Length: 227
Ligand code: CDP
Image (cartoon, rainbow, N blue to C red; front, side, top):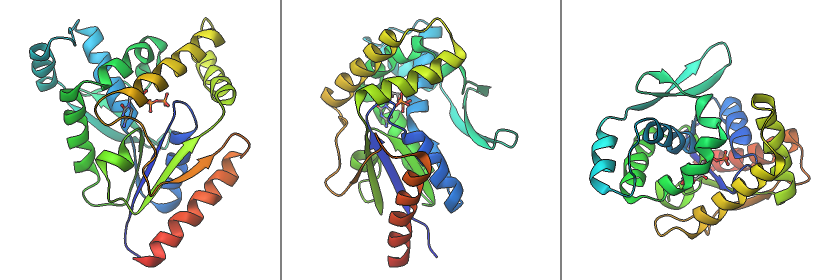
């Protein structure tokens, strides 16, 4: 059987990465978290005090950034490296989440990330999640999924996830951040978050992780039979 490209786009914290990771494992595909790339760039900009309103500074900073994903045999997950440093954990902080959508709206930054994402998918056999994967990065992907869930459920899930790392995070902060990112992500000029016309929507408000995976695997297998 040949390989396909599977894209998973959707709102903040609606389970895209969980599904993408499981799907990739089940199919023996590579999983790429495109949001992690924007988060790693944000980490670099904050650490190095780059003024992202200044195009010159943005362009020269991007020349210093090298991002790659490496498979961790212990956690059995792919992790992101920023200039050879494992930043998988650091980039999940609320400090990064507060700035990432602003930074991800910048043209030069999107071009930089999209070019790498397209290269990573050149041989297919990939599941990539994000906001513009089915619309801009891989408009010809064989299977496009668009995920959504009720805001209350999304906030609760992200709150529990963040509490485990930082007990000082409040549910109000998490909610405000998700709403702000959803607003910026869907209203920006370049590649705004939207459902591709040929994407299949999964609302996982009331679906558990296993049922969600079965549903997506069924969709993937149907596509695989056709190629
Ligand atoms: O996991 P979560 O839903 O919180 O977000 P993420 O996938 O880690 O993405 C973080 C941010 O990166 C998003 O809110 C977007 O601003 C940006 N992003 C984007 O612009 N395009 C993508 N393909 C992926 C993420």
